[in-house]
Image 1 (cartoon, rainbow, N blue to C red):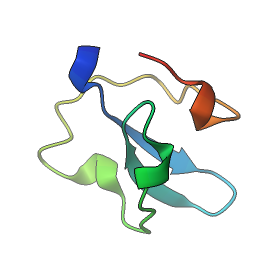
Image 2 (image 1 turned 180 degrees about the vertical axis):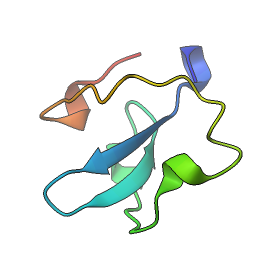
Image 3 (image 1 turned 135 degrees about the horizontal axis):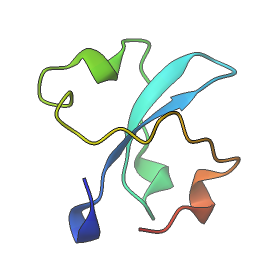
Length: 61
């Protein structure tokens, strides 16, 4: 999702975990082992084609 309500499904490749990420709220991350991309409500979100970032703190949207 974009704009002020931006949210992303993010994956930690080293630990093979996923979370819902809100830019500017890294303290709220809750990592899970399930594949969030398969959730029917999240499947309609745009795909960023596996774009990678080294630090979520630097993501601003």
